[in-house]
Length: 363
Image (cartoon, rainbow, N blue to C red; front, side, top):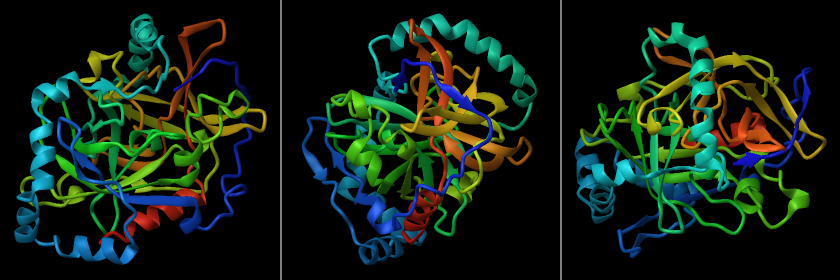
């Protein structure tokens, strides 16, 4: 998504929980991950699943034998058959830039982005986090897209954090289908297998109001809620996600100022085929009283980086850190929509903690 206006930067940090007084139940929405064939025929619809149903379903698949049986189901096979290497290669980067200028912007900012990434060369020698990966899904317009996500340490061992628009299109749109997570995806290689979505969780504010292109007065509404958690099935070997790749620790409720290591698969670098890193200090990115999120300068991550984690205390040896935000949008110059300024991501407040706890009940 693009915000083509100048921002006011407040450096005192934000009080993340002040505006989040809704209960987790009323401020979130969870569904069974929808699945469709290549011709659009629905195999599994996106329907609300009670906590009891989610617990029961996942408990039945909590052994290797049950997991393998689950993989032989028609729904699982449909997703496996859908995501051929060719289809993954042709998937469009999810529009973190959200405009027709995305391609031009990406092309014009390659050099700038590469220069900015040189600041993080010391990270290139570290162990790239296996917990980070590429997401693929089919949107309600029938097109295939790619985002970024990461595994989160949790009792369920099955949770991926990403941007809300990487699971749901926002106001007037639907849940994405055939959603899969490929940790450490690199130039079409899937070293740790593929993890299919079972349940999707996002904030109701994003699903109801996010990316509203029809109301300029509320064009920022929903951006602060652009986050999602996905409970995934086991991989082809019947293993849980974090047992295979580890996971980041989720941190919520802190200020917007921290040193962040940002990961993503931006299309303006190697066509989104490899994981990229950027490091810098975050700040409170504000537009009056309409938007208050985390910001970071000079990463210049374009389409496809949506949902990538912003990690504090990243450890290059373990490949893990504390995830405190995810990439949601990029700002451009008001006079030049092809010039990147800042990347933005939602502040992880107590609503996000409630959403995470909700996903943690999928066990």
